[in-house]
Length: 309
Image (cartoon, rainbow, N blue to C red; front, side):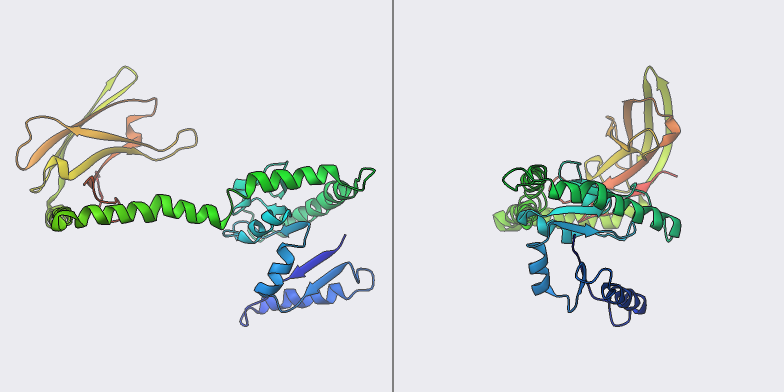
């Protein structure tokens, strides 16, 4: 087995520079010479050689310092396999048939005991799983189990973790909808654009006057009936969306239910009602108000929210 280490430290990162010095000194020891190599002057050109030439990409940051961890994605199309901390992209991508994983998906800070445990786990994976699989060859010299992992990694991960997929997602989910929204707002001499601008102005003017009135909760079979009066400050019920919101708990996901206006609203106040089926306590829910317009990207273009206190 040959271990290649490459990297750089920021000119102001003294700790990082010291770690690189330790690596260089280690690579020069007689008992590892030729098996452990430090590659200096790390840059994009060197990275190209690494990502298309290594068999296993080892990435062992302390969680949660992995960030996105895109370096390991770059080897997928070249048939390389990943051995990485369960953090960043690998916690989403990892399955036993496509690579190897370290860690328990928890954060342990700077605990030297956990570092030692992780080191032993790394050595064990290399010695007991990765190296034997790589060198287990058939009569034609082909490591069949290794090739199966390469195929599983390339076929299942490359379509998901690639620049092509990223650009496709951005185009389909953001760029194209944004372009269509612009065309709609610009049509008919900007009629919809002017309507949205007037709506924004109305929200800005009326929002400070918005306030909650009397509220009531009735327990009914399997759930609750929430009622609340909302003083709209000159807005209409169509200008806002009133919601029941509950945060996620240990055994329940977050929940959001729309409340609907009842007939008989006055120019100033309106009653909103929601009937929900749930096993959660009523106290888990808080009522909130958000601006609403079907043609506006919310909350991106209008982030205001008013919570019941």
